[in-house]
Image 1 (cartoon, rainbow over the protein chains, first blue to last red):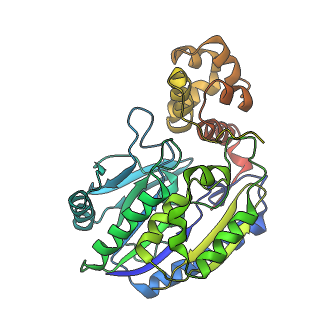
Image 2 (image 1 turned 90 degrees about the vertical axis):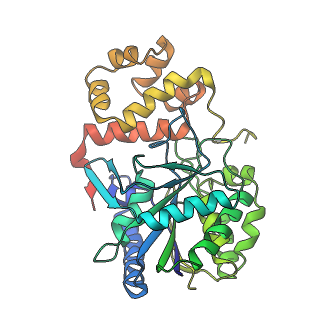
Length: 261
Length: 92
């Protein structure tokens, strides 16, 4: 069953803070992560299915999947001095893969891909104790042509149906967002107004509308990573978002959100 | 503002440059070699003179112009800064 849904920023400066970042802002985002961790403790998930965009870590230009499921016994990666290793919930991972393919999604699967920090950062801050296994789900966000928002939403709707039919208590978590433009000349100008307008729509339970966004609009507003949220929105339907925080830094719209189900 | 996308399709001619940025970002032993001798590390990756010049000192605009993926440029730069001065960072 699907017992919870969250979206969390994963910008690396929340984990490793350079002097360019406002420490108080970073700590306020950590406070929002701590609320998610408390909620997870209350929701008692058996597994966290985490949707993130691999940041050209597991999948370089040698092979670029649109959607992927990690189906190993575990997944591991590094970021700076951090070394992480998380068990994968194999029965759920395989069910998502097999039923997903059955439903017409041509998924890539991997038993060994490195786990990018985009998956790790939210889990570093929110993993309940004792820790639960995960199912990492990749959506290509940075290497064009990415899957369309509509396709992400359809995949999320299929995921929602599959998860609701499962015996495990599953929390779905989207990692990423909101507006930011790493490596471009717009890095210091995130589109904060666009983010706030999106959050208004999500608080009003209008997440479905995001399936109609275009890839061009996501790129223009620094929201290519919103594809992970849109996937999750396919699963949560018209649930209203509860915004734990929206903390725009000089380069990044940091949001932490729950969709109470 | 131009209508060009912030994250364009990575041109195939820039594959080697992107592979080098990827190695700086994701391969700590290559990153260490690059820090020790950027020119030799660039040669190891079969980069052109212009690509090697854009990498050291790292010139974001030039790298993107040469077809470097903006995210790879960003993260390679951040990794190099993390490796050069780890004590400047706060770890949570």
